[in-house]
Image 1 (cartoon, rainbow, N blue to C red):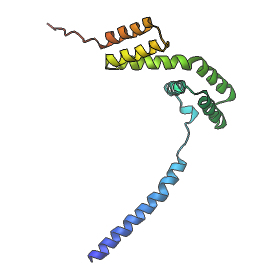
Image 2: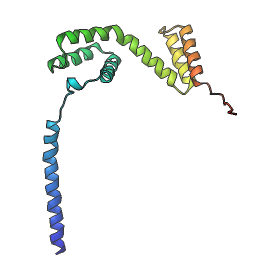
Image 3: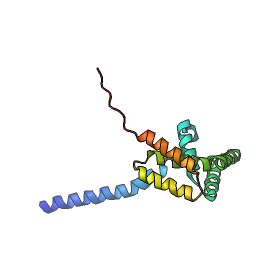
Image 4: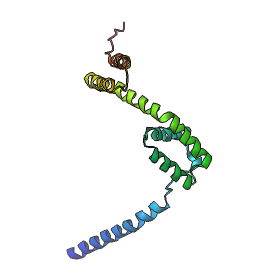
Length: 149
């Protein structure tokens, strides 16, 4: 009797496993692989643009845009506008991202080292590095305790 129960459990487990192996790919193929353009919000557009602006390789951007046009996610006019937007703003966006990371860093010595290297490489001026350090100090200054009466 015990062997019969074990065999029933094994057969049921194998059957369940087979159903899952066949059903999961079928469900995945029916899932929407792309975003419906009607459901794209302003926030998701901003996120997409931010991700594109972080890409520094122009070839990758061209490939993304070409694929989007081929998948009918962008029109040719939209593709040209997106490429122009990327060309005008990607360098400035990266600089802002670096500044935000520097200002959010916890270790002042590491920030100072990074800025010193940037000054030595001629990427920024000493005055700019000093302003970043001043901003970092303002952001990371301890908040004075106040007494409530």
